[in-house]
Length: 143
Image (cartoon, rainbow, N blue to C red):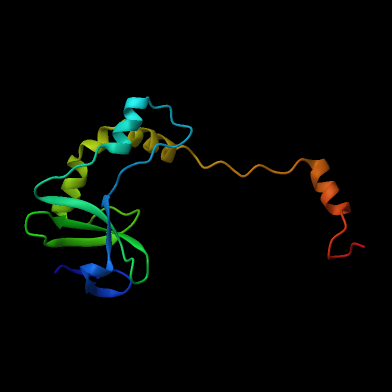
């Protein structure tokens, strides 16, 4: 049995966890223009390598949080456990991430472009909506 070190709960048996598959797959956003074939690649193609692999795991019988694991699929040795949204820190795991064919997919490139755009400010209410909100009765000062 595999012992997985949950970053939130500590070491637990594998039976408490659920594997969520390959980690670091960029999801195409609604505003991304990718072809049906490129979307099918995102949806259906998954790696199944012999050797170091980056996976998502969920502590389903514990804290229910997601995290990533760098694991050798031959020996089942866990090389590193790291949080969602982060890259692995260990040299071998980081090299595996960089060498993945997914870094060249249309979804990955579109997500990269979206991340580089400056954040937009939330839209402000038009002046007449602000005025109507002030006149509307409510719990504070209204009838």
